[in-house]
Image 1: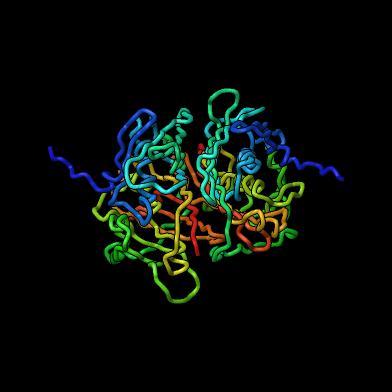
Image 2: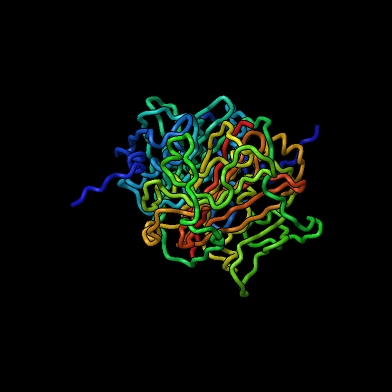
Length: 269
Length: 269
């Protein structure tokens, strides 16, 4: 039997089980400018839930509130099944580091996804094929190097003029290909560059405050897609009084909408 | 001094302060088919936070997870300030009714909204004037009667054929005009009829599971708008395996985007 080399993403989001208290550790590979990549934090929390012995069903909605900076090192996850129904579960997770100060507060809904009338209202975005796009040069933050970003539209620009445009369309995959699952979808839903960087054409102080992702594919759907990349689109509706929003979609190359995501973020500009 | 007649909405979302435990009561006026109107529940929780002596800043993001049915009658709100920063606060609220069973789990971010670069990326939806639209006949649920819905596009239809369309554009106001504030925005963000009703052209079993609203206007902005109605647009991207999404915008008639909202809901169809 071959020992599968663990993927860096699985290392980064690794958790040690407990009952209500799980342990994790920040990853230098997925480090951002002043803390861990928020998507890795979100995926780590999700992993604790997915691995939890009481978990039933597939992740359907997850909200992550980034309350305070996370320092390099170990953290605890206080995991609580708030309410279990016949076919859905409501979870609440608090991340702390050595004190009672909460750095991240998350809620998640798991559900058994039963067959139903099915209808995809949103249209698959037209896009140049992955093979016809070029990887975006990795920038300073380590986490960015763990992904391959291939812009179809709205590549980040510095300087220049023109109306502010926050729209982007891009292929996203793990740098070392890894089959898309709920964990990577959760991380990738925070992998769009800050909309304010696009709109202002410059890097400004920025931090995601709250992130919500809805999963529109269950484990069986993701297994069937069997892909290592998604087509992502992201846009912003407003920047006002130091906060701006982002809404995004993550599509399987085959045309299935896998996840939708929104976030609100602080910026200084 | 005149005693102002309280608005039914303020009655319905009334709370009795406590320290960490607040009390509220469901409202027959805002009753839905099998429980209170989710928007009233969300607004009641938000009111407990806004009235809280430790509250600082304006509501910026709120997520409400509807965990279990709420029975007619009194409920407790366990209100907790999870983390306070220099200019933002993270709250968590659990609603219970006479036991430890949580029926609603909410998180909220409050922030001091400081002046910044400001840019509205989304375009104000073109719409017939409020005065040129007709009120939608009130349907069975009591809560619907507390609002005036005037459809510009995508009025609910029963039966008929055509491609499923989940898009709606409509004027929304309290039946008895009430100045728009964060509380009514929170409630109105859940006041769109279920997208599945529009897409299927029929009423089917339905329940919102998780609702997230971002506020893009602070108290001063809302005071300046000084309006009793909003122009709402809502759409869905996908219905799949018993869950569907909704994304919406609430606009001031003057053209300012006041709030954006998403939700994921269970349906049986």
